[in-house]
Amino acid sequence: MEYLLGLDIGTSGTKTVLFDKEGAVVASATAEYPLYSPQNGWAEQEPEDWWNATVETVRTVLAKSGVNSADIKGIGLSGQMHGLVMLDESGNVLRRSIIWCDQRTAKECNEITTRVGAERLIEITANPSLTGFTSGKILWVRNHEPEVYQKCRHILLPKDYIRYKLTREFATEVSDASGMGLLDVPNRCWSDEVLQKLQIDKKLLAKVYESQEVTGTVHAQAAEQTGLVKGTIVVGGAGDNAAAAVGTGVVQDGRAFTTIGTSGVVYAHTSNISIDPKGRVHTFCCAVPGCWHIMGVTQAAGLSLKWFRDHFCQAEMDTAKGMGVDPYYLMDKEAERIPIGANRLLYLPYLMGERTPHLDPDCRGVFFGLSAMHTKYDMLRAVMEGVTYSLRDCVEILRELGINLSDMTACGGGGSSPLWRQMLADVFDCDVKTTVSREGAALGAAILAGVGCGIYTSVEQGCAAVVKKNAPQSAIAENTQRYNQFYEVYKNLYPTLMDNYKQLAALS
Image (tube, rainbow, N blue to C red; front, top):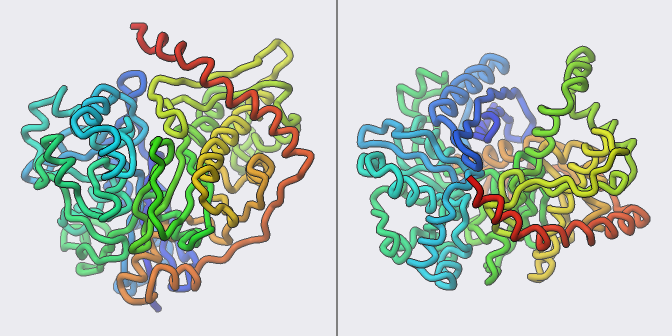
């Protein structure tokens, strides 16, 4: 029997899943780790935590499955994008990784835009300089921690640090590299022009591969630590969203997905590169060779619900623990009792600034319309609806660009909620499907590994063989009409508050 291993190095934890070649889950394991926020708007993690979680989950999966690790034919990697990992000449981590949701680099983004030119930057990298992107983080370390920068010899993304620990190879691939702000996205290679203007040595960057290409093999020390077999191939893999696209079969024109994980994404596949000159949505290389994807990003989607759970739903968490169920299940049931519009309460999900469509690191979360009549369950419903409105902002821009969104799939933790899926269908006014498998990015990484080791002939063929979908949830016309009324109020709130956000950010 042949097996494939998918590793997904996420923000809250690492998930390792073992699949057979039909895409069935044989065993899975997850290990969590902390996120550090030493200042308002900052977000960091320890790369060694990712590696320890990888070792733990791989060993657990092998033990649970009883599979001979020699039968694992390939390993695929997925992970949180944009994080900065800096290594010295011996491969040692120099500082905590500054991760995707960190917002400290506004000045560095302005510096990048000035050095390269706003229009030229979008022409080359297909995106403006954003605080989440890796390039601004590199300049921030150079500007604020010059002693660290001077010692740096290798710059990696989070999943590529795990690749290094597995294979001792410094490598990345086009989908994840697209989010660094240094890649020539139309030509799928590092941009010498951008690197020269930013005075970043190209030697610091890893070799760029396509997502299904073999980038190395498991070395002896990693094999001993994980229980894997030395010489097992490791393919390029993909950034979390590009991997989720493969795992949900979004590898052809007309197909799209919405994911509600820590962040939220609306993602559409395209075989023809399309760049928004206003930079409101992102164009990246996707995991299918010669193709791209366009996506809008909500910074704090599932993060908003987790924040609310952690601070206001201890009773539901205690009850869920006693019942042996997920607390989000109980929260869904409570939110379901609240009418559309949460009794005229709106929530802006800007806990970590925002990317689409506002590109504003200073905006913050807001409850609007709060009154003495409201309960925490009104607030809970408002959080779910506010995230959905933010995702609709993304949908509206994609439609404006002429992108076909005729086939929408929901995934991520939020996508497992029937209530949230119905919100998406009603607010987007379209059918929303789910995949039979809920593994998303891990499955996508495994499919890419299957292409790399020859089990599948192409990414598209691998998806056709593995990805199956459930019947869709359709929009309810009466709900859509009601949501539209509240969305009109929602979308006017940010422009009204924009100057106030700047004032607040300027206060010490």
